[in-house]
Length: 376
Image (cartoon, rainbow, N blue to C red; front, side, top):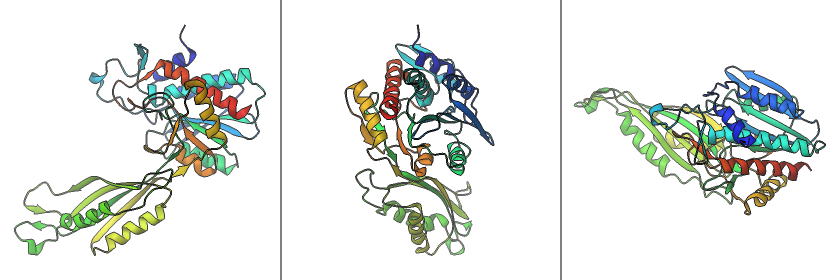
């Protein structure tokens, strides 16, 4: 007989929930949560379906957060098996979302079912915050649910986000924070004309080069005990008319900074715009604020999770703030303790995405014991 976590993960993978579609995943989750005494609340914002589900009315609120949406499968000819037809081969469960993050959702639910059965009178409350907008533009998902909860003074105290945090083996790494992320689109304006008459043109590519060079060589900070030094990266440059004998009118560069708690988005914007202004060029800049940095220091949540990991794996996890952003960046600013814990991330967003079945069983046990440690 299949382990309940594996069976549920297969049922979720079989639903083709390419962002922002949910494809019935949350309905399946709602039915299982309702059977455990949860009250379900569906929140639809624009094209995004969200679920807030809660069991209990007391603090502390222990929340599992995650997403049912997945990235597109890509070139189907590169998949060994159809991406939305879950298959187990050599103890690996294949399918889009197996690792990111339908396996985690299944482990959360099965762990919760067992915990409620074993501890029906647990202290506090258990909640689920699930979105179908994590892999997309992230504007109508978790951030909108958090706004709704904040407006009615409903607080999350502890939150496990089921992102695939593990690196080489299950629970070797727990993300207890994330760097901030801010992006910009910089357009430098010049004067278009024939390359043979430089006296009649003002080449925006030439104007932009020293600006970008200074930005890319600027020392931002040293980082701190939780975060590495801030990183500035140019991601795209676009210019030219397509002709080899024409100086273009504009050039556009896109860049991103992943920054530590040593900086704020306000001081980053001010510093960069001061650098650009010092070059006396005509420009426009558009900023995108992707998320502020956050850190969850050792406390009730980290201790509960670390103890659970030690009970299951025999080792404590490394606490890390590496990697990209997650929806934890919307939850942490409310005052919640937030960590990310999920399966190995080796194949996420790749063709032939897969997860080890034993890891999903172990993750279920870790989630279960985290609930025991925090709420009993």
